[in-house]
Image (cartoon, rainbow, N blue to C red; front, side):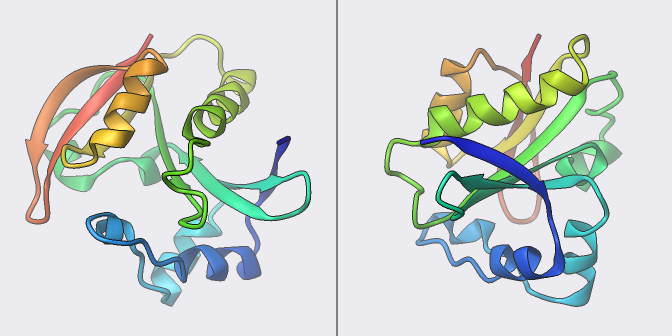
Length: 156
């Protein structure tokens, strides 16, 4: 399967914001409201499509990929590229994660080859943590929010 990126438009943002994940991943469900939609349209997000035109997922970089609590704790002080991502729930858990994340990392590296990459992931999401470790990420910090415990992971 070939993947491509496109800038997210309003229709694509609405599709993503309407995704519903099964428990325990329902933690990642979004609210489809004007504030969240505006964030998806601010230019930091890219949609990922299959070669047949299906919406496969998305990713963002920068402050929108950060969790505010960690920022307040000073965990994002180091100069890195923060990465956030989401896979269409139809494809989640079906063995496409490595190819999807590798594609995203390649896209980001085309823009910036020097800075380390950082992402934040809920500790209950063992599938994602295992995948990120396979991709060369290592745990850096741990922190709590009202909703979950998270770790930051870094790839140099």
